Length: 156
Image (cartoon, rainbow, N blue to C red; front, side, top):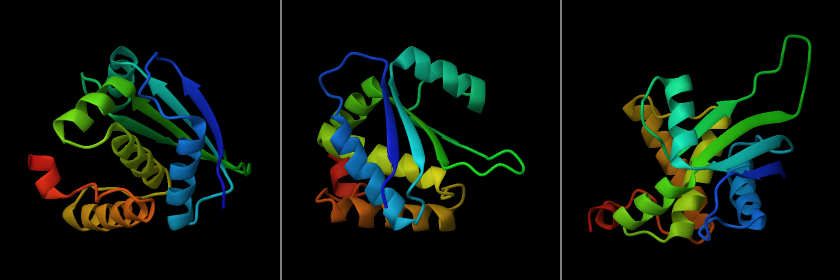
């Protein structure tokens, strides 16, 4: 299965992966939860836009790494739209540095994480978090990345 990606780059950074990487990661996540063959918009943004959206939609006054906006078809209308992801490029870089990960691995993780949210996964409670994290780990290690929740890596 393959997602049709609309990539919007609203910030200048040399650390932003190319569209082929986004496609690879999104397709891997969509395949794992059988939500492919749909349209996905990915917007890469700065701290200000991320903070504005996070405030407006989650009542949180700061920027966040990834926001997921699942699309809900209007009654009686069937579309092939999965939803939108907004990823804050400066936070990806900062978190990768803080977690001693490659920037590419962190981009991959956040994109997979966001697509899983759009496919209905969540981490509100411990059981859901364990299921979602296990699936993220399976997808990312299948793509050749280290497990994203490797505690030794995160605490270095």
